[in-house]
Length: 358
Image 1: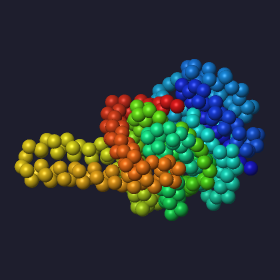
Image 2 (image 1 turned 120 degrees about the vertical axis):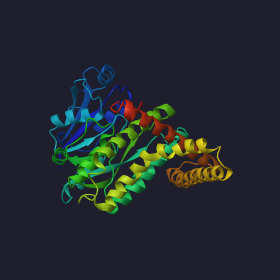
Image 3 (image 1 turned 45 degrees about the horizontal axis):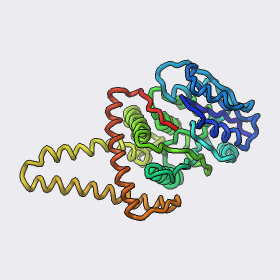
């Protein structure tokens, strides 16, 4: 059987980690073949006090790391990698709740693969019924993990890993260069490194449930970090991966196109400012700019509305069509705000880690 190493990086976490620790301990796999490294900064008294409230199983170990820049998850994971003794590595976040059979499924898929493979479990949102924000987030994750990634994997095309619940050999991880401590979206960067090193990505038919932000500012901060990290990933890898044997052209498009569009979203909205500047010109120009603006907004909202209607129904969320449209409308503008904030931070604070409150 495969020997697994779980990395559990924490930063200023309270009692929310107790359920995750229990979920990891409940994984149905021989504990002699599992080592869990709980990674905590030496000065992080909040997390240390929270860990003192629970009794950790014998195969759990707390790894204390120095408080040094850059203060990112990638840096913490690199410390864990140096201490790892397992054959296969996975990462769980503070709010991750893996299903009990996840390790068994991962071991079977890894050991029966031809060549190096990285298996990504599906992430589902457990608090989707809390408010309109969590409904939209759950819909995004459903579309991403249940449809988009499944289709890419079935077609043998590369895709981006999530930040947790992926399984890969320690050997493949090291050979690919592991994590970039200077990228605040280390999972996207790692995906490119693994793909370029001929590691095949696949979907694991297993679920990890987690909670998503329930407050707007928390959501905006999280998306700011994600967007900022995606900018960095594109600047580092976009040109290097074009026409390479690992990506090829179709794989390059399927991997990067959504990321490029997300990064360009704030630039698209500069059209509004352009329209306002030219609004006092001739009637024809004003009408033309106005019509184009409203048309783009209408198409965006229509597509978002249709997708949300479908995903809400599949997630068991009962809302009227007008209510779903109102959800889509509000969520669109949150994305715009997070996009502009990420551009600002990219230039002013590229290594600042916007922590997601749980």
